[in-house]
Length: 583
Image (cartoon, rainbow, N blue to C red; front, side, top):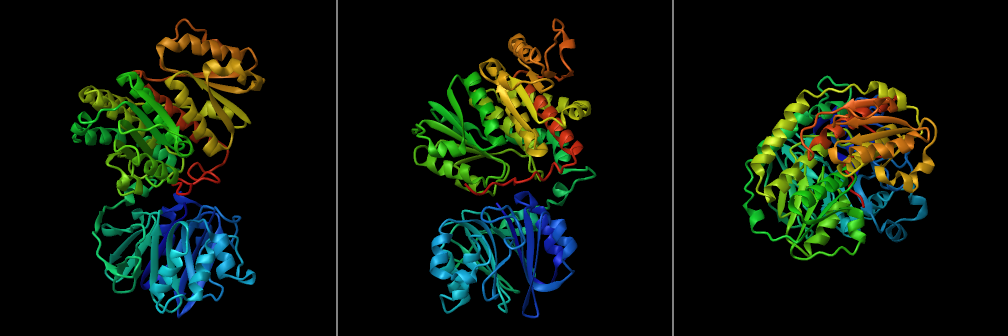
């Protein structure tokens, strides 16, 4: 899930590629590097960590061809040697790569001697196959090299003296924009200027020169492509005065929900009436999986239909029982999540009743799906999902209401939610201060609150590195109480009036073992002794289906505050990347 950039033009500044790489840091920030050609020489600069580290150490250079990379490590340790770009043994080829070469060990035995290999990466073999020169022309050689590779890749390659960029794609996103005498290649169109661009398809190749970019099939034959429109995204990838992207994106939630609601009123939902559905499978990863759990709850509650949420990786390994009447809903913020894409391909063999919910309508998931519902969240830069997660929940709610023929009610409920969110303000700084140095934290809830507890715990562990876990409140006495010690924080979620007493009884079991209780609730608790709690927060109660949004935003703010108080960067948690494009 690395990010790659390539630029060819006259006198390209290194500052330009740094700016584009910074936009791709959500894809990984273990290390970064560039290779620039000037006067028929390669100048390579690499640093571990974020793009700013590279920017500070790299001199200001000008060149005509330049490639850059921001890495999320899969093969090899995080160090300068394994950072991209990777050079061939003779130094004539430079490669940046996103993906995994599954047969790299076999290829190393075939195409490289031990003394030629200096990195631990799978990418190095690509450079060395290119060096062997299997083909009379550079494009033939490049196609031959790519045909040896099993796995997934987006490649941008430069050859010393060729004044060209060679591009290929298989299962990983790659886009091309050519304006005037400059061509830019990137993993995401957010790197492009306003105008037209091209989306590379699997098995396609391209060669960019100063005057044009040409596309080829695997036989080296020219192919024509349809250009797509690219709109200016600069305002969406700016912090706009906020200290971190995460806080900005939490704040944008009500606005994005309104935009989603407006868009969903324009959708022709008549296709749903042609479907007979006997069961529903909802598939996602991470936060998207948690939104699937919420969606399954909505399907069961409102449609009385058998609905199950599954992590995409488990769906792939499970003997899931599907037939032509099964509705499969796939959820992915980026639309490039590798496990989710593979799960969709598996489902397509059994059913055509497939809906994908994604934030990126030009993504691989969207292109493979018969029906696509956008979440309309806008660009989300922080790795920990916030506004995208809440928009996924609202999308699933609107889908279920459309199936129930209750769209008018859904619109009213969602617009009321967004208005209340506009006025929603919660100071969680004291709670953040109380828990920021803890080693273990527990979240509990019942029913929909338990799902929100899962997401809240994930958010906190992602960006604070505190071990925190969520449990159904009724499960504490079935083993979890053994972990409760003096002063351990237990965060209690209560939004369902019917389950208030049962949830609080479970909380008091932890209290009697020395736990500190912190309550997030949307129900009046006049008959409850609030002195038993070490802190409490009253949340708006819009309805039982959507109150979880307020809980979610509250827990996002809590995680953010804890991360900042611990001196961490909430936008870039260690070992993680936003777009997980490897299985």
